[in-house]
Length: 112
Image (cartoon, rainbow, N blue to C red; front, side):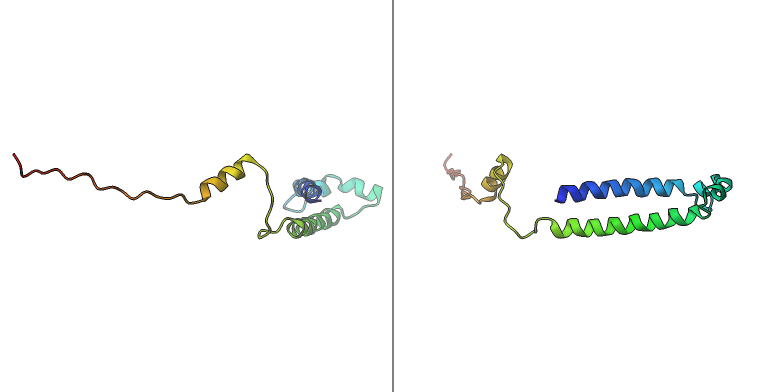
């Protein structure tokens, strides 16, 4: 489920980038390129369609990210992993007995 939501989120992000790149920041973009053909096809405001699709994709990204966060594994839950890396981490995490440092043997420096 989570993988499907992540893939869907990536696809929505790609579509959002493409829709934003089609638009011109000064109001032209794809809408100005087809201004004469808009009247023939019947669509007079291509900018409105691009703007509404931009908002729709942005809202979809927010909803998908919340769904991934809610359906994901909980941080406090114990997750069983049978990997060698986890076993190594568990072995190093247990404290071992630290040997006390031994004082070097004193030599008698008074006898010459």
